[in-house]
Length: 352
Image (tube, rainbow, N blue to C red; front, side):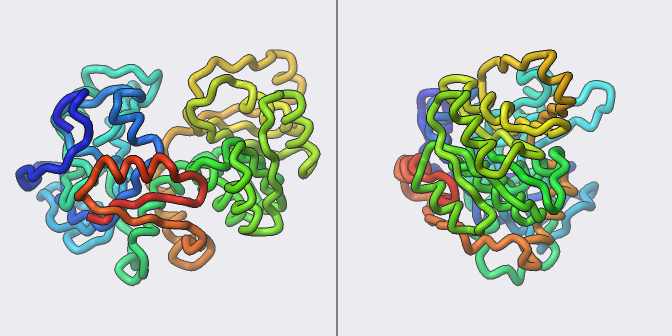
């Protein structure tokens, strides 16, 4: 992408050159999020240009700088895109090859510099990424379907939310926005964590049916848009919930999110993971008297990535449930159009 109005196009660019703190990669598979066309059109914030987009995926490490130790040449690694300054008193975070700024979401000179330096994302045959965004996946050479592993960055984001919610075996968990790709990831991981019931809440009834087919513990609630009615339906599915994970994207209003809030039991936990852009009308006394815990969760820690990879490697999370459409580099516009129609367990993966 060369300019804001240039769109995403195929081009031959110079090989990424190894630099301190980084590793060069042969890209194996990178998921194309459903909202990528909107992002390319400028609907989700900016990034430096020219740039090779691609926020995360699976790759083989080809070379590392002398000061890199977390990965080695030959490793299969996941690129998470999240680059952290590691300054404890003033944390700065940004997504590389994408939009997304930590903290209050406003760019700073530090986050601008982070993204200016690292522009070689994973929508390419080869990429350059800093060590801080790479997590080695021991044993991934033997995994038969690297295109399915491209979903691992999304599972890690969802898994961080599940972790922050304190989900344990026997808990009842609601996932609001379950028909999106992040929501579907949260459903998979709540099941893997031993949830007694997972209430999948969303608008797309076909996707809800697909989620219900995963496991008898998945109970579905289609959203109506009426906060009170939706809250009653969510509570009726499995009783008041121990935890609700909100994974909604850019929706017209806060009502579906607040319906999830209304369905939490006393002493329960509410975790916000999605992309809702609205102020939430949280009532002070209700929050206090129900002793609710409200937590934010953005991206994932390396430990979460490693734990989820272990779950995949040993069959606790089965990625064969994904419906994967593989696309190549030749037609970016068609790839983005295909991705825009994907949702839930349907994913579009670039295999360059």
